Image 1 (cartoon, rainbow, N blue to C red):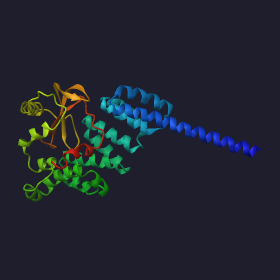
Image 2: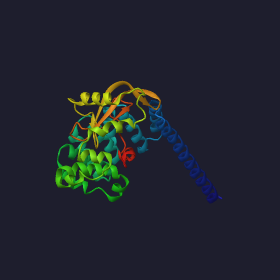
Image 3: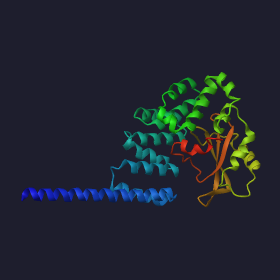
Image 4: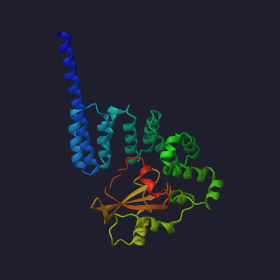
Length: 294
């Protein structure tokens, strides 16, 4: 009889744990839906509740940190991250924050440490900083460590890094490539051609209808001429104000992102942006697939 009671009790406990897991999963999925629908403030409030209920779920901490980065709350990210420095993904996002704060040495250290824990995205960011420093020998050394699987899944991003490095390390290859057909972003590194920029920018669907693209490009060139990038990834990025320039998810935006080749003012892309702060938290490759065959 006693054994039967223990078995039944064990079943009840197991069943309750299963129900709790389903409840937690359903709650977090609802927060993910809020994020997908750009309901950032609401998602942030719900995440705070979720983290109080489930304080050991580090994936929720990561989502919360990404929201803080989107909102430009870098100091809060730094404070929270102190408790989770053994988490390679949180360390990666902390590296992004220090990049945005223009503390590139600290950012570099964090990316390298995160990479050593197994975060390949951090290796990419580490290589980018080496390119920004014009340390092409080191950049090439670490470029060769990018796993083949990552190269296959992120070929556009990796190709861009290759072109930056090879242009400086192997200029003779660059001379050969001048006459080859290359995807848009790679070709703009090999030989910059401003004449195609207007065609590329026009493909963006979220500009206001009456925008004059020639004037827009001229305005962008003038605005970035004497300022430092807002942040950088595989491009230098400048966020500038242009009231009512377009719409994001049906809402008017007053900001533009100007992308240039690293360490240059050579503009390769311009697009409306929702935020005035740097918010790029995800790997860039999935955003670049659109340009793969240009």
